[in-house]
Amino acid sequence: MTATTQDMAKRIYEQARRLPADSLYELAQYLEFLQFKAKSEKQPMSEPAELRIVKLRGLLKGVDVSPESLASARQEMWRKYDVPLLTTDRAIAASGLVKIID
Image 1 (tube, rainbow, N blue to C red):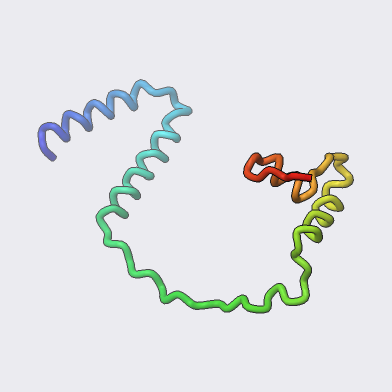
Image 2 (image 1 turned 120 degrees about the horizontal axis):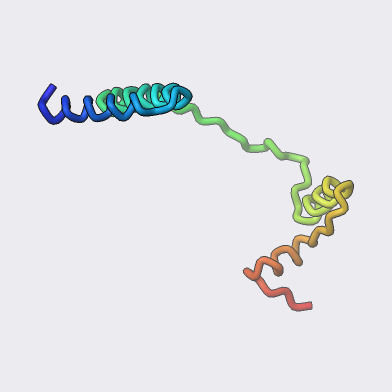
């Protein structure tokens, strides 16, 4: 330990002595975190495991995911909460991104 490191250790020790007892647990947890962080920064990152490709083609085959179908499902889901919902076109217009002309 260098002189500067020793001085810092003494300073930390003195500050820890002045902490209330219930804060010592938090200090111990934080010190463990710092030790873990220092240890993991020294270790080189391991190579990622070989990635596996999962094909999702056909996953939603036969499922209606049209905007109208989704809006209907959303209305049904939120009906019991008595929340007025915007239709898909009106929701997009309300966002200000697109102007709907009737």
